[in-house]
Image (cartoon, rainbow over all chains, first blue to last red; front, side, top):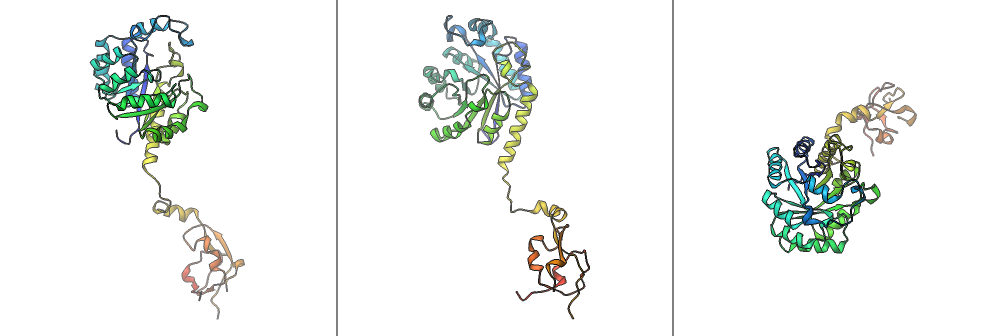
Length: 287
Length: 49
């Protein structure tokens, strides 16, 4: 990865099971300037018991049924991946079960994002690490000890690893963003760090990039009015495009330190705006 | 001898910089210096320091 910050547009399941909407979300991610578009591969029978407790935002429709209804077939996933690749954007999707990892291998993804809820799923992490593919590890609901175990599991196979600060609150208020954690992660594991955002604005992502995040992830939706658990906390296209523009500008700032002693650009400004010693009376040479 | 009362600090910045005002105080004019004009280094007799 170059110095360019890697921007992941997380579209999750906001397509609501519509293949056409999924394609359009890829198109929107491309037009916003994202480097990757990320879906979620939920295989409800493989990842949840039917009577497992659900987050409050699933009160309208049981989670099991929602994920069964909004999933795609292997052939559809492959077409979406091809659609992304053809548009010059990386196709990613998070697995929530070993079965989903196998499916993503069939689809042919090149890197894995491990969602916050899967950090302690060490058997799945092991099967992901065995593929040898680079891993983005999230951290939204995990302690240092739990993250140590996840990092060690990946590192038993390889060290192509990014660790991402994340707070699993929807939405995440500024007070819980945890910018301090970026440096702590970098020091703890000597890894490139990233930031996965659940706040409403772009500021947390921009601050994270300023502090050295090399990968940033934020939710993208057509509209906050869409159905589903994520839409109301996601960025609409105009906000996401503004985020990418801001990240690119901050990268340009970071890559171009200014030398205050180099005044070559200000010679004319100094003459126009600065001041000199002038006479307020007539002086003559002394006789 | 040029005294502080005979000097001012004004734009433009192309003359003796304002920060060096104190160096001009006490110097001696080598040529006629008109009121309300920029003072040049070359207008002044070099000081014995």
